[in-house]
Length: 176
Image (cartoon, rainbow, N blue to C red; front, side, top):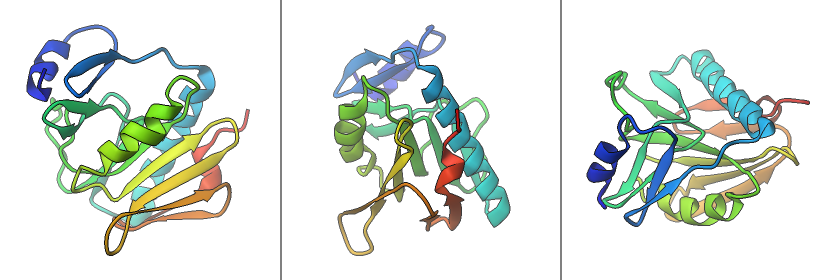
């Protein structure tokens, strides 16, 4: 199945799905911790965009990112820059930042398949993987020359340039 066929198939269908190499995968229900960290990340990104005064926008989970002709992912949060996309859109064509919150069932996909896939998207500069248990951020970013550079941090400030955001690591997690 192609991405275009998938988007038609998924329209109005209950539940959330991703397409990987032409195969449809249902997304599992989330644990409360996952939802809270996802919300904290979305809020922190939104706040950082406002503080930086950038023409960028945060979108929460549910938006589709096209990886290639037969693969789409739905990150837990994303940032794109430029004019607002059509409010009826289900796909974000040029994400700059994507965020995934780890869960026991998706850890290997988030750190493997999605890591490789997201960096196939030419506009993507940062892929943040949040560990909600250990409060660790695995920050993958497109290298200055080539390749992907990775930092693993549990405190301090994340510098996400481009587009020019700064976020305290603590803001990405909710204390419970």
